[in-house]
Image 1 (spheres, rainbow, N blue to C red):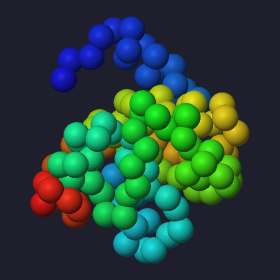
Image 2 (cartoon, helix red, strand yellow):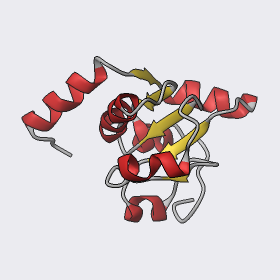
Image 3 (cartoon, one colour):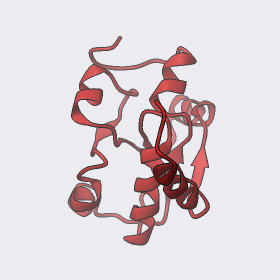
Length: 125
């Protein structure tokens, strides 16, 4: 997907303020049983086609509105992912602005995860 220059600039600015990780680190943490919440910020249609094991869904369109009810503990470790790592970076930036202190965006997102052959849940298996 070719993104617009203004969108890419917004994402790059967000990435200067957030922490990122990669798919290998998220896989390692899942395999080790680390305690963190994995949040899929993709659209409902994307979620329905498949997701990372154990993920919960709070799409980019509603995460800022619904996060405090869904995850009231603002210190809880959270890893966000989307299709490629752009929407999750934007969401991580906003959650930090809302007081969440342990938010990480997974660079590469769903595409990198599935290209690596890592396990998924849902329709797309």
